[in-house]
Image 1 (spheres, rainbow, N blue to C red):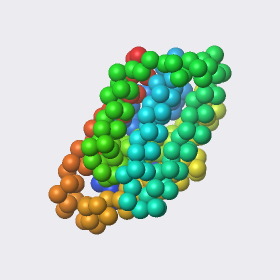
Image 2: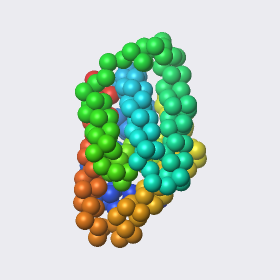
Image 3: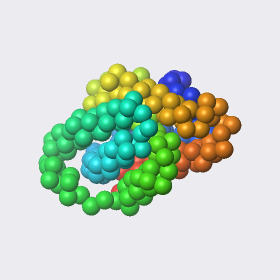
Image 4: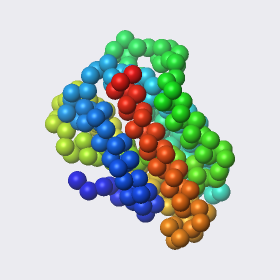
Length: 227
């Protein structure tokens, strides 16, 4: 299937990432989610670490509120924080509880080095730069999961062991979030670097931010797969 339409900046960054993007969105972990062959232990290992990841990811989106220059930017970033803290993380809690992993266990989980590297990179991007830098580092997660969800939702056989996970990211609620995030990125970049993205002096730096975060996403899958 063709890549989802998540805005101009995403399309350019995705193309620039090239094989790095494929290594992330078509990682063996993702393939295992789709065909149901991913070992359950690997999935649960990923979920526990992703719960920890989402805590820091929520902080990064909260930082986006601080870095915003318009009320529209603030509302979008605040809405994402709400979705992460009050909805997406609860999916992890429910799934892990079914496997005997309680919420206290999730909160006490030791953070893996791949998790540390990724989350601190995103936070540093926002602390050292402006909203454009932060969004470039955040984009691979939000928009990559949207692309993965849309593809697996169309290709994965129904009733597989990871159908709930796939449906979460393939569903219209998440797809709408991905489109809105793409629109936010386009508007934020136009405000800060101008409408001609590729002609802006900062474009190469923002693209490197996106590609680095994409590489760290692939490392996160690998952490789940191999421990």
